[in-house]
Every structure is written in C-alpha cells, then in structure tokens.
Length: 381
View 1 (spheres, rainbow, N blue to C red):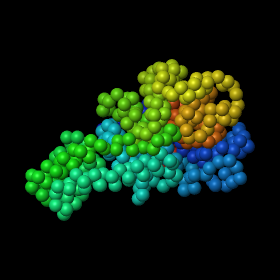
View 2: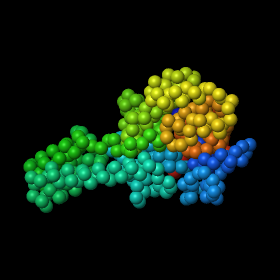
View 3: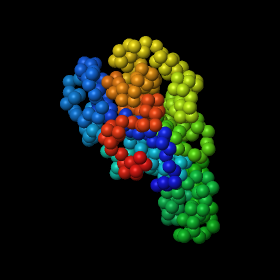
C-alpha cells in the first residue's frame, strides 16, 4: 500500500458514514414486508444480527446468512476494494489493475464471502470469457511461428496484457521473450501481438445493469483520485468496469458531482440542483419530487419512490431520506425502516448524510466501533 496518500479529516468522515450506514443496515437488508417494518417504528434497528427467522413468512429476501452484526454488505466490500486500489496505486485509477483485484477478491478463491449480486456475477463472467477470447486471438496472431514457440510466446505475453498498456507493454514483453527466444522475428511477432490485443482491451467489462452497485466506487474516486483526468470521464470508466449501462453512468456522475460540490462548500440543495442535468429525465423528475410532501409517512414515500436496487428508485429515495431527516442517526435508521435495498442506499445516505449532519465530529463513535473493516482499510482511521 502507498501510505503517502493521507486521507483528509473530511474524507474520513464521509467514508466512515458510508461504512457505518452499510453495516447498520445489514441485519434487515432486503426486508420489504409492511407489517414487519411497521412493527419496528419507535425502536432502533441499526446493527441487528442477520437472522433468517426475521424473514420467515414475510416479504423479503435473506441474503446474509454468513454475516454478523458489524459486517459489511457486498456494497461496503466493493467500497473497501476501490479505496484500497487507489491507495495501492498512488491515487490513480488503473482499469487493468482494478479488474484483476476485483476478480481476485470476488472471484473463485478470493477472500470475499457473501452474497454476489447480478453486476458482480456478470462482470466476473465477462472477464473470464474475455480471457478465453484473448487466448484464442493470441494464438491466431502467433500462427507464423512454429507451434511450440507460439505456445510459449502466448503464455509469456498474456500476463503482461492484464497489467500494462500502450508503450508500457513494450519493455516487459520484449524482455520476457528475449530470455527464451532472442530471435528478432519472434520478438517482433510478440510485440505486434501485444499491441494488437491491447488496442481491443475490454475496459467496459460490466453488466448491462442499472442497479446501485454502480455507485460503490464513486466516493473514493471523488475523494482521492489525482490523475488529473476529467471527473465525468473518470467516473464513466470506473462504473463501466462493473455496470456497462448509460443510466448507471449518468446517476454515478450526478452523485459524484453532488459530493464534489458539497465538499467544496456549496449548500446541499444547491449541490443537487447544480448536478440534476446529469440525470435521465425519469430519475431527475423523481428527485425533484423528493422535496414535496416531506411530512408524508416514511413507508408511503418509500413505496412511491421505490425500494429496489435499481437506481431510478434507490437514488431518489436516498435523496428523500436525506431531505427529511434531521441527524445522521435518524437518516440511517429511516433508511433501514424504509425497507428494501437499504444497504445499497447507504452509499448515498452514508456519504452525504455524514457530510450534511455530523460536521467535524463524524459518526457516533459507538456505531463506528461496531464496524468490521479489512485491516488495510481500518488502519486509515
């Protein structure tokens, strides 16, 4: 890890808010049942242990049987992964490195244990299929070489394609081939192969999916990325790794710009107003309605905006919760009591809620102490 990148106090508060909101919601994640949720009014629902019995005979989906109170959902786990990625790579987003880290963590044999959602599953499948196609293309491009030589050349070139791009490929590929085959023709074929395959690299490896996992990597990029690339372009690259979908990109760009503007001192409402043009019309109109009927019962409003994982529902409901809450704790509790994909909405409620309500104090310490983070991330706080 590159420890030269120190997180600012404001960045820590925002990230803490996200981790706390996610872990707090895990125990009742994807509970939709009206009566069950109504029974929870007036009591704290944060940091409940995931329990399958809670979901028996009611409308909901129990997904976290291997988790305990304080654990993160798959959203929080992806947030950790992006945070660690930027720290490891000098605050620069590296698509190839991130795809490898993503596969190593969420894929077979990885450290992640828990629910795998549709974008994650399809992204892993797309990357695996791309590996197969890459191997076939490499074999075709090496046909001018003897079979035994071509086989070794393919084996040597492919690993570097997953790590380097452009001119950075030349020296490692050349050195790897020269060790075994100093023949200039073999080296030429290998370099030509690497160049050709690199031009067609699968940067947009994500699912055609507009669910809220698309926002999981946005906040660390806004807080930490220092490559100097335009933020909209950068966010699109990040999102399309896992969610190759226009609606997902537009919603993520909106979220990124709201957060950036708010961090820089613009008021919450003005930050939302200034970024609305990024949104698809359907989502923009719903977010505009979040300032109406703010005294309506939470559950009725949640039903109106929608409680599923899809961004046209989850993003407006998140903004509604932020607009109608008066403290960070209340926003987190109301997010859970709204039901549905509360962990997904925690990405927005946690980040913007921490910024909106906690000031320099940050999240409640008793809540923060309950959150279980990977060691590499925990040491940042």
